[in-house]
Length: 172
Image (cartoon, rainbow, N blue to C red; front, top):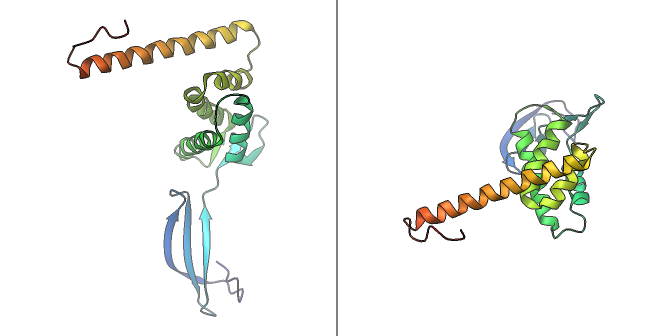
């Protein structure tokens, strides 16, 4: 690493620490020529390969922008959108690949967005999955309803199990 003071090409690492939940490495360095200290920050670059073959850096801001459009007019706050974008980035980075197809980024958005707001999910999914007909919307809505019924049944089962079988007819 080149020293920013004397431009000498060699430096020694004095200390290394993770930052930003392990996404960055902050290194304290010392120049072997002039002795001055400086800090460098290293980040693993994650690239997204678009359908056209063009590669661009992963952008959490771009994720937030797309989700924000889907959530327009919905009761979803900016913090929830930022948290969703963070979850998406973490799940994409967890795959360990330096390059990720844009299709996988889209899939990583769908799950958390479904949990955040079902109408926003439908909006995003209709564009992402290129819905061409009303039937495709109806199938997706049916899948959302089935998932909701399954979640409610799981909750009823958990409540019944906790109560030792007493009151197992709650909400039936």
